[in-house]
Length: 61
View 1 (cartoon, rainbow, N blue to C red):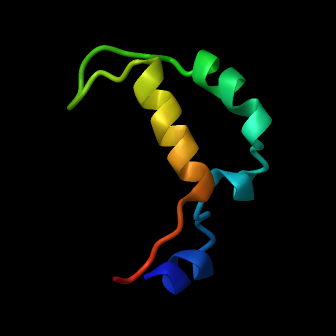
View 2 (view 1 turned 180 degrees about the vertical axis):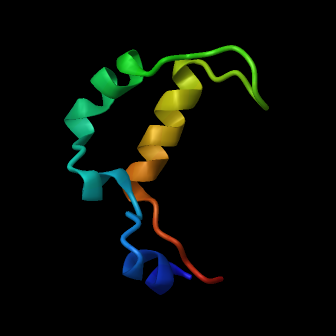
View 3 (view 1 turned 180 degrees about the horizontal axis):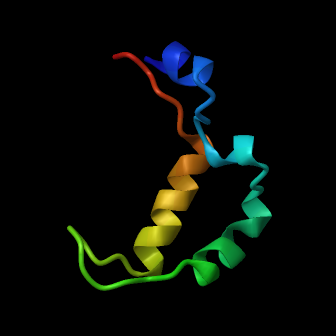
């Protein structure tokens, strides 16, 4: 799956988009939080998702 995603040009983590860890606070603060959907996220949730996406890779386990 990972090879196919890379083949079609999808990125595997946000560092591939040029994001750096020192940008994290700015990314969290600039994220638009909207009510509705499956779960309304707060800044803590958004920070956790962004932190995880810095190290995110798909692994077959």
